[in-house]
Length: 150
Ligand code: SME
Image (cartoon, rainbow, N blue to C red):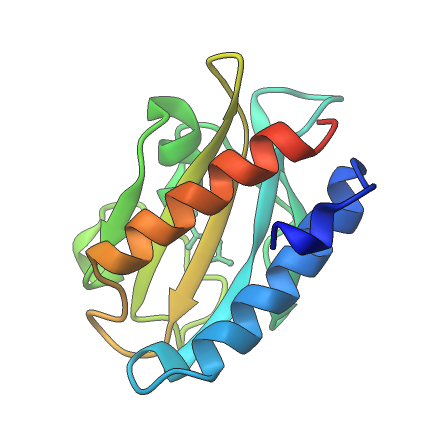
């Protein structure tokens, strides 16, 4: 990903490539990683900062907007902390854009102490993500935070 942001600060361009990279990276790994069924971004809506709006992604069509504080993505945006869900059914208020999704990891992207968006990855198997995924995605969030104009 470091190579993909060279000479480019446009957030749409860089998150579009990140969504593709994440999809193909997870699919190149053994199960459960190969069962990733959505990889993408929700970003704080500049026109209405109390909501997230869908950004670039790979996977099935998804909800256009998510209120900050709602669902997994909105909760991560509100609390500015990663959520790793072994089983999405255990999270009250989980928003099921795709009923195939069984586990999920959502990581905040922070600039100057404020959330500008989240990385969201879904898996069609329970326990699809572990601490290695969390660490890697948090590193990706740091890279995107500093290498894009949000
Ligand atoms: N499950 C998310 C909604 C986005 S989809 O997973 C792509 C949530 O509860 O915020």
